[in-house]
Image (cartoon, rainbow, N blue to C red; front, side):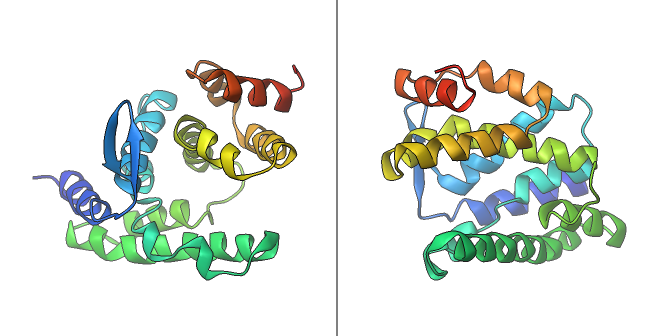
Length: 194
């Protein structure tokens, strides 16, 4: 087994323990395992020859996220931003030992950690591919659920912010997603078409 295969096996085993589930195409999955698989698939679609580091970062980006719930932080934007920043660094920190266990050396571990913790330099193509994939997974799996919890204008604002973060190829891919009529209406309004 290659280091890459071993690392994916270790990451997937960790995410398979997620007590939270999502139903996707009629089947229930551990949430973070599904998100990791979908993110990896989007990265492969958007970048036909992705680096191993990018694929590893995609697979481990939200490693064991359920152990660091948003609810453990104060409500509001400040609490959200602190949770998100702390989560990025924590995911990178708990991924590193798995990569070393799979026999990766420090340069690859450092690169994967930089991608996961969002500390790659501005304009980094791998970081953009990861961000694109994350936005697409959000649109594909969480849009409806979040829209049910938040007020309409907040959802429109979230969609606008997500759209601004995405590259043109990711935006094109997003427009090809199978949105429900309610989701499509939200997306159209966020993009100024509604």
